[in-house]
Length: 110
Image (cartoon, one colour):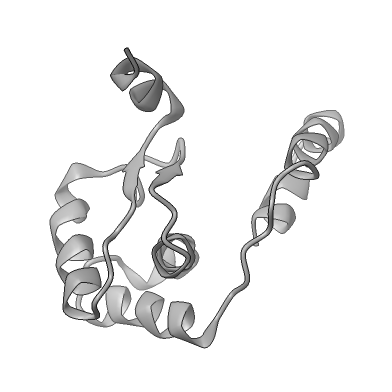
């Protein structure tokens, strides 16, 4: 999913994004992640149009990724959605990742 999204837009910028991504580990889209993402939408934690955003969160959650970095502040790094997303993850036995922008993460570093 990330590779597909990074491939879109300006060709030169896409190539630069893909070069960075090539060095990272890819996480599998599991059935468990798909089901968790569906729960986000069904429970109203995310709108249906943000189903792919929910899948990003679910994949990170299932694979126990501690931080999910994004510049998407509409549906991902959104404090009003954090509580419902964390509650759904907790009910399913997971701990949601901390969802923040790269700048927020860097500010938190000593």
